[in-house]
Amino acid sequence: MEPSQERLEKRRREDSGPIDGSEAEHSAPITRSTTVWYKDGNIVIQAGRVQFRFYKGILARSSTPFSDLFELPQPAGEPEVEDCPVLVIHDQPEDIEVMLQSLVDDSYDTRFPVSYKTVYSTIRMAHKYDMPTLRSKAIARLTMEFPDTLEGWDARAKGGGYARIGDVETTDALFALISLAHRYEIRRILPAAYYKCCSKMPELLKAAEPTVDIEKCVPFSALESCFKGREILLESHVEANYSILEGLARPQGNVPDCMSRSDSCYTSWRNHGHEEGLWKSGREVKGLDMWEQWPLVLHLCETCRHYTEECLTHSRERTWENLPQYFDLGTWDDLKNRNY
Ligand SMILES: [Zn+2]
Image 1 (cartoon, rainbow, N blue to C red):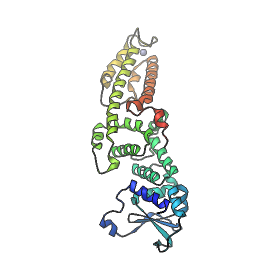
Image 2: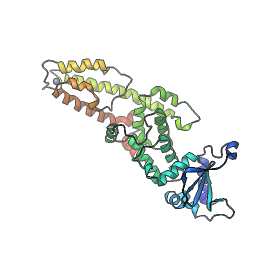
Image 3: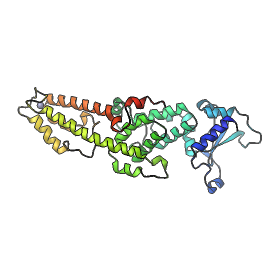
Image 4: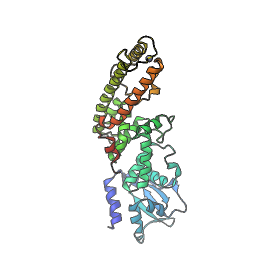
């Protein structure tokens, strides 16, 4: 077997899915893709029972395994469709459709939202067929949704709900993308993804159960990390709020120029804190909320508000910095220095 063929065969074995399908699938009629059938294409790719007419040159430019394969002479007597050679590959038609479309369609750029399933397919195919550009595009989309900087996190929060992965707020998407990040070593998205998981613990427990659908099976280590990180986040949030309360207390507090006559800023923060459940470890993780999201600060005098805002800003910066450690993921530098 030639090296390129061998490589594709090897990759097929490593990334096997329902490749050849059942008997019934074998006897199903072959259909043409309604989305990827370019009349001037010069290669027909067949995945399962679906054929796609595409361009050799674009595939060869994007993928070394395809490039190597196309260098080989076409054996005599091989099947052809409309004068194009037919290359049978062992992937899901949906994955191939995504891969081919994203090679030629600008709407697959990061400016437009796609489904998490598309991102999953893109990463899987980019990995299997060694397509670094495709992989980078998909990772850019992932890091927009699960940023690795606090600035990125804030930009996403302020983005008015605009998402590059349209269904990213669903638990199916969240868990599938965590599974993807583990499988393909895209660990820099994990702290933000785990943080989002902290409010979905019952669903997360369920998703950690072994299932035939590997895309939806969250690794047990992720579950462990989320539980541990969530506890730390809840505790540190209470600590930060107590620290602010102490700072507001007079005369020993940190705000000597409080404009309220008595201890009203202190009392206000304490009483409203009771109402908001600030003094106990609750269920909702809020360590990365921006101070604008805190209605409590509206009850303080201007000086105390300024002090509180500064405290909250520092607190969330500290939370962000420590986020990977909370989840047993090392440091941000560790995650960002990974070569992928
Ligand atoms: Zn005050």
